Length: 340
Image (cartoon, rainbow, N blue to C red; front, side, top):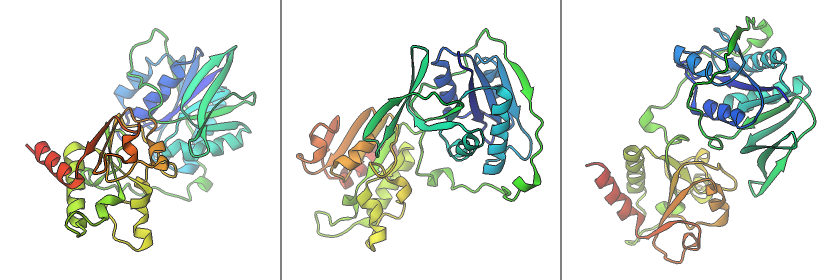
């Protein structure tokens, strides 16, 4: 039976994020013993939760040099935790922190890595991972003999571990590491982020609102209503707390010198060349449901779309509900209902 390490990091408040809990859930889906490795200070609640995760041992690296996300310190701390744990299989969340640091750790330990894994399984004593290739058009199930094997878990692929109790007693070991001066060339001074009401990309939101290029085209009166479109979309996002996505056509408009939505960027792009979100529900507005865009919706459970054309691509088995309506009028009415 192979020894597994679940490598995590804490949030700024010392708590465990949803993605970290999903990674614990992934480890618990395997009938293997596992060790916990945590980088960053742990709150009292997080420490209590982790003590009930079912791990027989927990390694912690905390302190001023290791609490903030930085490649040099994360890679150093992660490497030392892997070495101290003696694990040959390492699971970590595929967040910005470990997606950046884990490849370096893998290289230093001469291992192999599979990123963005969406499923784990076991057969004849071997562990298999499922991941996507070729712009998420090909799904592969594979295993490796090389050890150590590093795996990052794609967000939304496993159930969130809720911190329920376990009879396994977890011993805690704190690794007192000193970061070499050569690894302090980059310093984290502060974190700047937009106010909550300006944050339009929300991976944890239950709803994804996708805007197409139709919002920027001439409407029934022959005029373009870009300002009204932005007001309606932002009003819906503010009232529903939805996450914003966009088709390739709408995010490309600015680069082509055309008028585009001011709140839209390439970071919002959903589809074959963009992100593949995992929201519970999604609604597409003013877009036609072309295959490259729809492929980005494969993990959304309930799909709805708004389009004036009842024969658009969304109507051909790509959405659960199609509203044949003017998106301007419909979103305006919905905003009025949400504001009550």
